[in-house]
Image (cartoon, rainbow, N blue to C red; front, top):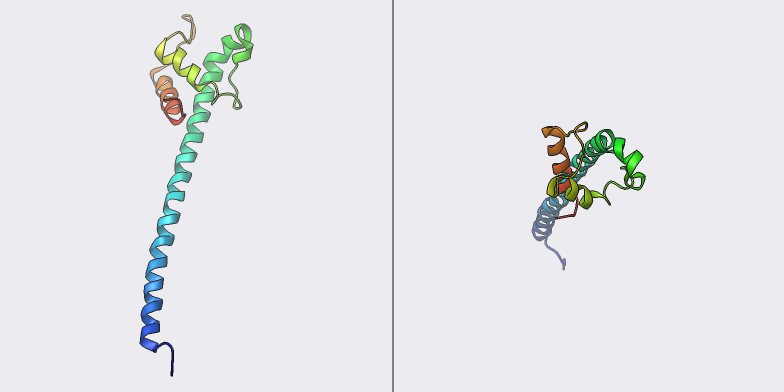
Length: 117
């Protein structure tokens, strides 16, 4: 006597295959989306750092060397950047260095990727 009938075995295999394929596809899809988000966040951080280096480090190098922006400290200083640039509107100081509307937008978009809100 056979334990499994051939037709029964086919049904089990088909059901098993149907259950596995969608589960595999669903688990790989978020990783592709996450990779794109990470790449976009990385690009935003580079753009924000370029702005901070060109507009802020000019003064910070002379007047506040402990707060010179680098790739190593930019994330740690994100809450202070948000406070000084967007809330208190104290930075950048003076009339010589101004941020453009686009630079404000890039900094703001980058800050929203940080865990400061």
